[in-house]
Image (cartoon, rainbow, N blue to C red):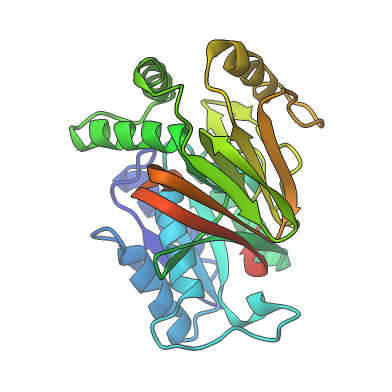
Length: 321
């Protein structure tokens, strides 16, 4: 089995010694080529090249951002090749191995992998020996003639604004710790506009909903983690269904505090509240804004947008897990 390992040398939770150990372990199990990412978007180019050259597996040692790039490279190859039969489009692409190396590692943890890179490597080596695969669906966001796939979440509004602020702090040399996210979210909440919602939700067979402040779009659950604590705004979301959405039409403390308590609790029921907008297992919907609104995808801030369409892509990817 030929595998290409994409290594983000700046991954937060690994060092050179750990990476060498993991590379040797994988190299003993497969015919391994190792490539280091050097710039934003490099993982997508490398993954696309791996597909074009007929690699069986693309392994990623990095955080959610590196994994997202690699997945987009596999689904948008530079050589223009198409996927396999419609019943299983994932068959036309290399399988994916995920080794968590970032600060949150939401995709890896949602797949059931340990959050420690060494333990996760042990789990994927076992999956390799048994050829144990899982086929998962992805989300796709489309705007202004562009598109990008996401593995676990996207969103518009307040959550994307917080991610934008944290990315600014990271650019100044600060680490993206859970405490920093919480403090940034609190500071940003005090300054955010809570009186003029900008977004409208529409979609095939979906009654239009206006005056949405914030929208979380989920391809799986949890949406994210606060340290070791999973957060479940859309507890019914899964890799085997369409997309879910939780929208907020009120941002005041009376509406927000009960919601926070609910999404921090392990539960099978949807959050309840008068000013919540919820969708489950939808193939497509669109968020349109009266003014540019912050937009994020798999925890990566992608600027401000006035309209984004979200689509479910079933059976998109095979993961060795």
